[in-house]
Amino acid sequence: MIRGQETLNLKREPLNLYNPMALDKNGIAKRIAQELRDGYYVNLGIGIPTLVANYIPEGIEVEFQSENGILGMGPFPFEGEEDADLINAGKQTITARPGACYFDSATSFAMIRGQHVHLTVLGAMEVSERGDIANWKIPGKMVKGMGGAMDLVASAENIIVAMMHANKAGESKLLPECSLPITGVGCVKRIVTELAVLDITPEGFKLIERAPGVSVEEIKALTAGRLVIEGEIPEMRI
Amino acid sequence: MNKVVSGPVAALQGLKDGMTLMLGGFGLCGIPENCIAELVRMNIKGLTCISNNAGVDEFGLGLLLQKRQIRKMISSYVGENALFEQLMLSGELEVDLIPQGSLAERCRAGGAGIPAFFTPAGHGTEVAEGKEVRVFNGKPHILESALTADFAIVKAWKGDHFGNLIYKGTARNFNPMMAMAGKITVAEVEELVEPGELDPNFIHTPGIFVQRIFQGEKYEKRIEQRTVRKRD
Image (cartoon, rainbow over all chains, first blue to last red; front, side, top):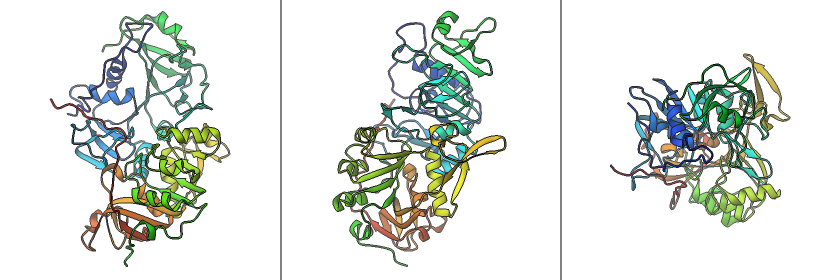
């Protein structure tokens, strides 16, 4: 069984100032890890998505693909064992698991576009109620580029966004329409934030679960796009 | 067929101002360090560089940016380079940002004699502006054209004098496609081995794609994000 990068040495930092009950980054990652299924090939984006590898549920086997050219990515190396020729798409030093393989970028994106990768988890600056995602550019301010994100979102059957519900200014990132240049149209299926799990439906953001101790009212207050609330909303089980 | 040249000076002979180059690598992983150093020394200007990234401020293609040798970059991600962002936002540097998979495929297509192809990546985004859209299997796709270069400069782990190449780990990345797409492809390798030493079953880039090859004098192989875990 693969436990991924279980020894990632990241601080547990409460990110959420307005609600001490909300999840931290690791909590978001833990909830997303519950979406993993046995036999999945998974591409994890940079940031919170990377942490998902720490919480693979008992008894299931998954393989991580990194679009720079590895399948079977393992945990970070021990100090002194870093290899400059072995990195992930975030340019971090990694290791290869037994049975891993390397390939070129065209082959890598054949896996992605060809829908051989089962699940993609990535971060976002904004998501619209129709499932559009923006995560590559802030005009006139930040231009980092899309990297592999446009190929991933255009092709993946199953895209989960891991992000905070609001930006640093406290403004909702779940919007009627993206205000930033989009990365993909109508591609997001599910969003996991520190407050909630939401699905994209034709009616808008459908509230599926709340973080433990977080009220529906709090989620409503921070969701700018249409929010669909049907019946009793269960708490996440982390 | 002996394609071995003495070093980067001979390998880059004929490279002139204003040319289009492809440079292999992902971040600083698998970049042709020796040729980049020579490009800096040659002080060639007005280059169009096709490379997934633009190096960091002090290394890789960042060195060419520092000397304002690059007129245009065609890349997918340039987040690691503050100077790049500054030159781009000020308009000093022309930049074409394209999805990473499309970049890889455009290079592959360029080398494979495929002038253009349809891809779903970027549909409905800025990237699709001005591009033909066609629906296949109920899904819109955009037309992307092939890329080629006057010089493709790649880095491999091992090579022989026929130009056969083997890459190591994730240092392979864009190198094989770019090797295919150069009018002149220069390969610098960590180890130039005797003909017959490389197992033909494990060649990544067949020698036909390579015109000049040399063993790099040294490889610094900088690590961008050194990430380690504690021993239990």
